[in-house]
Image 1 (cartoon, rainbow, N blue to C red):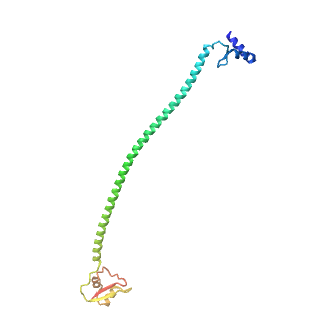
Image 2 (image 1 turned 90 degrees about the vertical axis):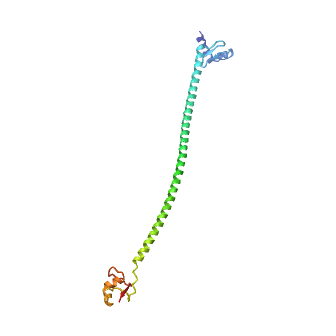
Image 3 (image 1 turned 120 degrees about the vertical axis):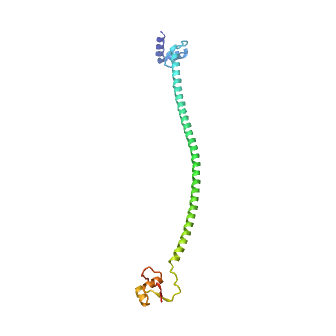
Length: 196
């Protein structure tokens, strides 16, 4: 019977007069669109349905908040891990900087030792070369002729030792020995001592 009243009230609400009557007598409308007269309580099913709707809405909002909290926790975990890696990297970088400083000091020490060693080697070689040059220069100089009597001859272009020896009534061997020569080759402008 109550269902019949609800239908009848709905029909009247659409007609205008009953809408005013319903309004003045204090009828109520449920969220699902059903109209009840004043004093009638909504069915317990409606209240349960409302509570279920509210509960479902709370569950959805709770799930959304839980998802957001979970996402924030994951982001926090990632940030903590990143911070740990950065701190470890920073510690490693500090160790690396210390190691680099040690390597730089060692490198400077090696450079300094190498420069010192190079200077010592250059000085030693210079001394040896100077001694060798002095010895070689004294050995290369012809010995001054022993107070012999003789003539100085300047070689002219095209002259041969045999011709010069013949002109001074000497031999090529005597002239070679007097001038510390190894062979008969002559150069224009060369000075020869010809013993008597």
